[in-house]
Image (cartoon, rainbow, N blue to C red; front, side, top):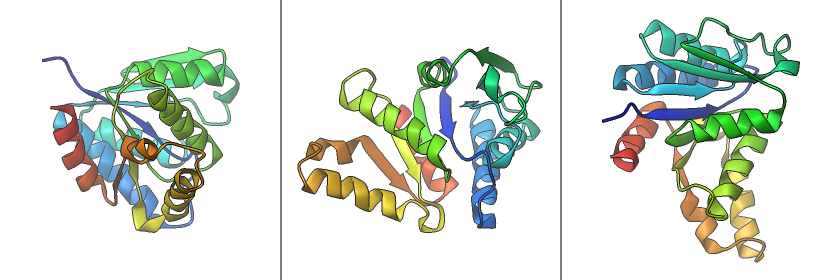
Length: 183
């Protein structure tokens, strides 16, 4: 059976709550302990760096993808198992999702939202059928969930949109869902 790969979208900052970084570290460790490859944005800062360093420390396979213009800003982590530099952000997102079996979104900012919404839109359009999990650490994504509900209730999205996201609160719950969804 081929190795499973999980694309993680998350912040290039740590955020205000230490629970975000703890969740990123725990999830990186869990991915490695499962023998699954981490696919992520190749940065060595914020939650991106935390998830990657934890996966590496636990002996995990890491696949990072970064556009050339973010190499300095996100401190491109070149000691990964595989390190890919793209020309554009769009190429980065495409390479990441095409090399993953599932997507998990941890707390993050506009970039994480951009990645989530592209993955969600592509799923809605039938361009992929990969599971998308949102890790709602300490309620971080509560307002996003309400916004998605509003999109549906106001007829700007089909009700099926809600079925494309699995909501979890912890790294362990994410792993349990991934085991179920990827088997």
